[in-house]
Structure formats: C-alpha cells, structure tokens
Image 1 (cartoon, helix red, strand yellow):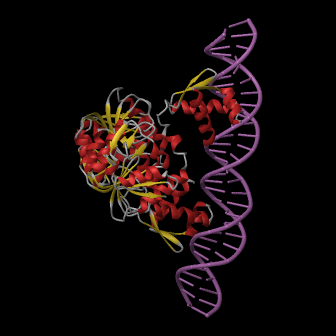
Image 2: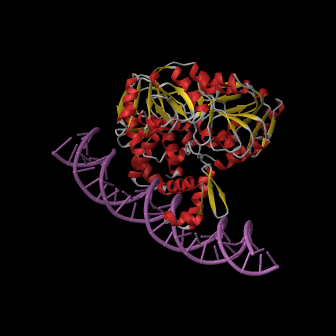
Image 3: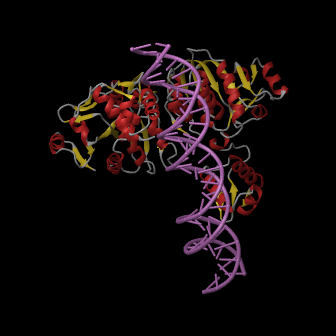
Length: 251
Length: 251
DNA sequence: GATTCCGAACATCAATCATGTTTGTTATGT
DNA sequence: ACATAACAAACATGATTGATGTTCGGAATC
C-alpha cells in the first residue's frame, strides 16, 4: 500500500473538492483499479465519499486527516522528537502519555524504561502491553473511532483520581497567543484533565503545529513547562514560547 | 510459526520436566536451530526455562499455559460456543465481556452487532475497536502480562459504577460443587465485580472445564443464569448444573 | 584444551500482499 | 430500450515478508 499515493489522492481531492478516478489514475500513474481500491479505503476512513466516476472530499478545511494517514507523516521527525521527550523523563517517574501519532512514538520510546505509564490511547496501550519493566495503568473511557484515543467521563474520572509526575501532551496547534489547541472537544477535555493531574507538563509538537491553531483551547502556553519540537521550527514561534517561560527543545 | 510444534514441545517438556534440544528436534522433525528459536519464544512467555542443551518446564501442574498458546487450542469449538452465546444477546443490550480466549471469540462474534460493550481485556478491546455500530466502553485497570486482562482497583471501580444487562464470563473451571473458578486471584475479583454489576450472567466454558476446579472461587454455579458449552460435554456435569437451576446450551 | 552448544548471518522456500489485467455485470444517459 | 461508461470479481504477476534450514565463528562446559 503506497502511502505516498494515498496522500496524493487525499490532497488532490481535498484541493478541488472532487476528482474523477481517471484524473487520479493519471496523476498518480497507477491503474484505475488501484485508484478504486484506494478510494474505497479512504472512504472507509471517512476521508472522502465515493460517487460513480470519482470521489468528493469529506475533510473540511481545518479538519485533521484520520490517524492512519497522519501516522505516515514524517515518522522520522516524530521519532526524533519522541526520543528527545523521553530523555526528559527520569526512571521511576509516573507519566501520563497523551493520544496522537507523536505521543504514540513517545510511548514506543518508553518501552524499555522503568516507569509507571498511563497511556491515553489504545494504540499506545498496545505498544506498551508487553513492556517488561513498565507498570501500565489504563484509564477507562471510550476509544474514539480511528483515533483510538480514550475520551469521556470515565477517562476524566480515572485521571482525576491520580497524580502523575509528568504529562506528555500532544496537540494540533500550539502558539504563544492561542495556547495549546486540539481539533476534538472530547480530546481537549481529556488533555486538560491529564494536565491537571500532573506536576510537570511537556508538550510535543512538530514545527508545523507551532503556527497553527485548532478549534478547542486546552491551556495557555504559559502553563507548559517544556515543548519539544523539530530543529527547523521558526524562530519567532519558539521565541514567543520562550518569552512565556516555556523551555523549548529542538530534536 | 508452527503452532503444532510449539504445542508438541510444551507438552513434551512438561511431561518429563525437561528435554534436550536434540530430543525435541528428533521428536518434531525440525532442525535444532528451529527448536532453539522455539524454546527462546516459549521462555519469553514463561512456559519454560532454557539451560545449555535443553529446557525445563516452568508450568506447575494445575497452572494454565499462557494466552498465546491457549488461543490456538480448538479455535473451532470456541467459535461455535461464542456464536451460541452471542445469540443469547439481544440488540440494544449493554454487555460486559470477560477476558480469556473464549470470551475473545465472543467479542469477535459481537463485532457487527448494535450493542454497548465493555470488554475486560485489551485483546477484546482491540477486536472491537473498529466495530461500526458498537458503543465501546473500556474500564480502567492494569493489563495483565500476556493475558492482557484488565485487573486491579481501577477495573473494579469502573465496573462498580455501571449496570449491565448481561455479563459474559469465562472461567478456568466450572462445576456444580465448586462453582465457577479461575486461576488468577486478581482476575477472579474482576469477574466477581462484573457479575455484581450485571442483571444476567452467562458463562462460556469448553467441555473440559466442566470437570475442573481452579484455585480462586468466583461464585457458586447457582448464581449463573446460563452456561454455553460444547456438544460433547459430559451428561453428569451438565445435569448437575441444570439441577442448580442453570440453563445449559450446547454448541 | 577439546568438545558441545549456541547464535549471528546468510540462503531458501512459501505465503502474503499490492498491483495490474481481463471480463462479465451494473448503472447511467439518451 | 439500448449504448456506453464505470464497476467489481477473478485471476495473474511481481515484490515483500516470515519461517526454516545451513554454515561458521565464538563461548561455555567438561
């Protein structure tokens, strides 16, 4: 399954709202049959909607693509950021790890460590299920479709009952002006609960997110202790965060 | 990975307490290198312990083999039992599904149904994560190593806060005299909590379990509403259960 | 110090998966 | 109703992966 082609298709359809199978086959160089199969897949993920002859986009602008697609996005960068974040955690700590693709990488980076970890997504829980030295604590909740992040009152109640040394929080947008933001309201509520039950808050955010703001406000940037981002993060963004009292680490 | 060979090895080692690599290679017809790789795998799962030249069993009699091995055991029968149990559940119900290999099959059988389901293991949660019409509720808790059943105070608290129409409960032993029993104390406590929060309790048990009793007592048989087992369940066992007021279904 | 066992590295085979091609069927438009 | 375009099932192909076997240098045991 060529991830590149899926991305090309997603982008092309999103750009003009709709594309024909023939156009997409020409664009990608793949056969029409392959395009049809791809469209079927993307339709299942809720990215687009099939109609006879083509497909129309279901992603509104400002909406995030599904997990399976984002997971293919710059995995190399995410791993570097995750490794840097993991390095900020000391053995023996208790850590709550947020949902999202970047945080999933953080969870993987903690696999061999000696910690108490509460992951906030099924993905991360699975990644850590066979970790030998880890005390794994799962919160209750409802796994969000596709994302598999745990949400709802059960999740918030589980978090409220516990106190962690560190929270690793992912985001969809993070700026000094708008603070840490997320696309999903339920996710945002869980993030807030996780932050409320942690002594120290570390955000992980690819550079692109530092100039983006999503719908749901989670917390102001000043509430963060550290942000881990990529090396090509724009200086204005990181500077503004530093001015808020946040430590910025580039991976 | 030949499941047959792993079973042969496990049985042979358990029978005589220890076996040499050479013996096992002869017995299974595989090369010594393959046997070594298998032993490494089984050692990771805690089935046996390597020593130079062979391996010795770590499974005490009366102890259950790890999940990965049991999952390969008579999958056909388990699916039939699971289908029968699933048929006892009406659309719209709320159901709590226990951990274990048989209950995992029940979860799979519920995949396309319209229900509210709380699985008590990560395995089952994963199997149901992409179910389109299902409301999935995860309890909190600690995933038990290998088994991935959720245990601990978080799990019991999650269950105590909810009321279900039906509980599907797995077991290690089930007799009219000794009731429903499990190998693991923590699992048993969770089972009890699940049963306490359900109006109706259905146990699933392969025929072999109807003449077995494990360490931890969960509930007396009379507390069950129905038992689903295989068609070749011994008549004395099923008769004794019926005498306790339990409905017995053979799949 | 000799022998036996081990495990890493490579080779091989089978199974699986993604993709393309063919062909009969279905849906759309006139 | 008929013609055409799109579709999807079935099969073919090539690439990738995973299990197994073999060889060989190194380590543990006697």
